[in-house]
Length: 307
Image (cartoon, rainbow, N blue to C red):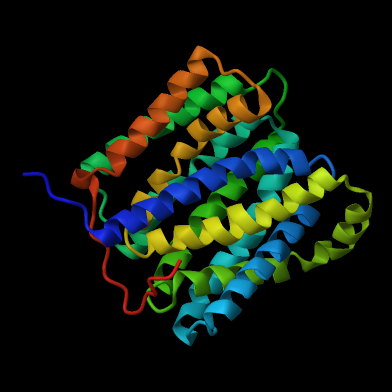
């Protein structure tokens, strides 16, 4: 007799799905807004939009500041993931084509697994490792199939690599904070830390807002409200209920979804090799998130059920 998934498991899975879908859409919006905004200005505008959206939700829900124990993880994740990662990724996507960027950034889940095992004591069951290997092969396939000749630069690759390292460090730092603070608290104050880190780009943002087309500014606001405020909160909600390694493996679905979204929204018809890579990405995620690969995360001392 098959076991029926518990409601908390279904909610966590749903939160992970929302995160992956919105993060995939972010790649399209970043490239669109990047034509009018510099990397730092785009990151700051995105983060400020996210802070406003999250702040309104906190006021409505009467959510107070996080406890002192959560601040080290919030500060590190805010610096690395909300701040440095967003600037590096925006800059990197201006220097390399989408395929190369996706390929390099997708070493992030592997780094998360290694750091999680080393620093958080995450178990790495064989099926999780197998799923990550399949998904990474798919990401490589997608990246190579989408890469244009001569479209890459050494600086762009280095920036995407630094973004991947910052992403992995931010996730691993965020996990302990979720043991004493809610997903909403961790996301709101992490986003605020990132915005403060990016304040040196305020002058650029003010100048560029005046000249940017409305579509680019709307893309920047969209990035702040949905892929940042909403998706980072649903990510934190799901991360609090599983391991960092397993959540990192879930993001391997992003390249496959980017291919599909580009196909539908931009009319960019993918080739057979790109489609095959996308299928591999999704297959690997399915394997890594199967119940046989699941590792029960330690129950946090205090985690709000709110998203």
